[in-house]
Amino acid sequence: MVANVAIPYDAKQLSNVRVNLSCVVRSVDLLTSALIKRVTDAELLQYTLRALQLTDLTTLAGDDTESNVARLCFRAAYPFSNLAAHARMQGKVHTAAVCVYLSRVADAHRALTALGMVDRIQIASVATGFPSGSYPLETRLQEIRYAVGQGATEIDIVIDRSLVLTGRWKELYDEIVAMRNACGDKVHLKAILAIGECGTMVNVYKASMVAMMAGSDFIKTSTGKEAVNATLPVGLVMIRAIQKFYRLTGKKIGLKPAGGVRTVRDAIGWMIMIRETLGEEWLKPELFRFGASGLLDDVEKQFYAVSKRL
Image (cartoon, rainbow, N blue to C red; front, side):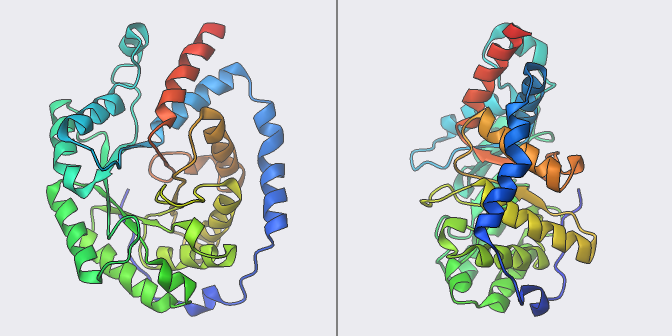
């Protein structure tokens, strides 16, 4: 997948935006509830493996060490602890990426290289003053350059929410363009909106449009550190922005829910909503990811349980 490039800022795309929250909630229910209830065991197994392949396996803890990151990378490459399952699935199923702090990118690169998976599992790094984004722009750009230099193939930036809350959309656009340029033309950029701190659904929609205009390859819900993280209603608002941007430009932009997706059932709701709105073509790692640290535990549990029933 070729990295996105910025298009000129278009303030018209931010005018007359209205979001009816009750309608959004009803739409999510109509899109997902009935289909979730009808999932068979065979479909559940397929969803379970798909969720694994769409996961950015994440550790963003203050006590991360090289050994912790090495274990994370091993589990990303070989997610099943059961020996029979491990042998059956070895080399066939792995997570889309690992996601770490920029100071741990080199550790992840060494671990994945040793496993022979450095070209198959992406290395994502959070950057730009994560999680607040409230740092001088130049230091945030330096973080991106450092992470890329250490081997990151994806950068999860976090936007400055103060620009969203005060409606300084062109300034937000200019900052993300600078971050896009710092990534270069081969490293993908995911823009974390931190939706729980954007104030309104209208702001979420506008921030989504600005991030895509500025060259983001993905828009991402949350850092996982906010009080409100990934929810299906906010996901639908972001999907509507993705659909509008696709109609305007022909560019397919990815979506990454992060924070709060802990079980396969949670993941199924998202995958069904993506399929019913953006289509099956979006359900691949190039266009959809889960940012998660605990989801893989339930993936493994469900895989064993459903396999026994089939």
